[in-house]
Length: 259
Length: 306
Image (cartoon, rainbow over all chains, first blue to last red; front, side, top):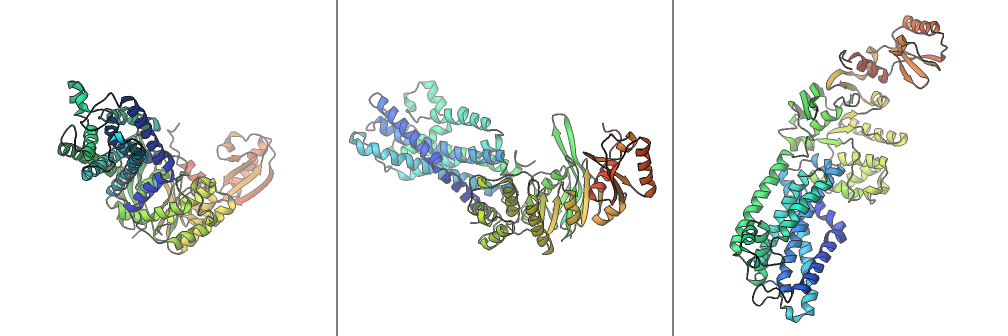
């Protein structure tokens, strides 16, 4: 356990020690969404042939949890260390900016995927209870589901790192989360297919990288999606590269962490 | 090769009120194996200088090296050679004492060093706290934990920024015995402190900073020799005459006046008599580092300063 792996392990242990709050709570939130929206909208919304609304909702909620929790992990860890002042223990070490980047981003992926798995397992109860749901916990195209889960989580982990470096106070972090991350995830087609939207909003949705992550992940489960998974992968991949490049560069110059 | 070398180090901060020069051309070397003291009043630039040395901040100009390694261009190598005890009492509330030390070792690429971690905990009186969460430690224990975290990778050069603030007398002794032992083993020590008697007892050489400039740099014994060698000390219930008050160091009832020779002592006493004041518990003692410090700081007050 040396260098970046020590930092990676520390970051994983950090959220795991408060797992009730960092993993348990978001799983419960997603299950509540599923219960309420599934119950209210099951008979009103028809998305894909042969796919019930609740079944359609499950992968969307799983991916939304993956993304939000990946972001929450790196951003809250960084902003807390800055405000508490214990970031100094890292600043004094020979760890390179690449080490920081990989440790923070990969630990965010671990948290995101852990919460996503939790949500998926919790939904097993619904699947078991209702045969009409017609949802398979095993994706039809598992590789696609995994690729989108990991690249999406990595992108949000890197974005969280940028937000954590930028924010100087907890309310700035809350603003980033509430005014950027939440709207982008909610307006990404978690709860609806964008084909049901008016033309203008369909176009707007196509500008949202979160849409492609959710759509691509859903393709993994149903083999159907609003756009081609290859297009989604291309857009998510490019977004990941751009955001990672920004994060690595901010770490390299010590943005707001070295005087 | 010096352990630490500062060459023309300047640092300017941009503030709302315009640029502020925290360091102004600071140059000096600390030799390997030295126990070196960096003194100065609050705001003199001590912590800024240490931050630049530790890579927490960048100098506006000038170069700093640790055992010949430039802290800016070869940052990772330089940081491996340094163990820095930060001034702020910070800790990570998620972990216990042993976890925090193991992680800190890991960041430096050091593993399987539990024997050294145990020795550190023993020397710093933290052995029974190894499995306690950092939040459960008292202020003094957290401060000693900062020392342990700085030493966990066995750095050849140790930097202590106010390490004894808030640590009680007995533990301060333990801490200094341990640091002195490391110094005997060959570690270089750079210390900043407000406890001047500690600096006098421990440091072989001392640099004094004021307004970002080095205003004194010498062996501790030479600094003591060069200062006004005696101090007239007495207790007084009334206000000092203005002529004496300007030179005096007053702590409650206790008044201390620097004096070079017997004639100056007589003059001080005469001034008291003329003012009709009666001094009690009069004694004459040798000047200590605190007197030297006040002398140097007083002598270097720019006239235009308000």
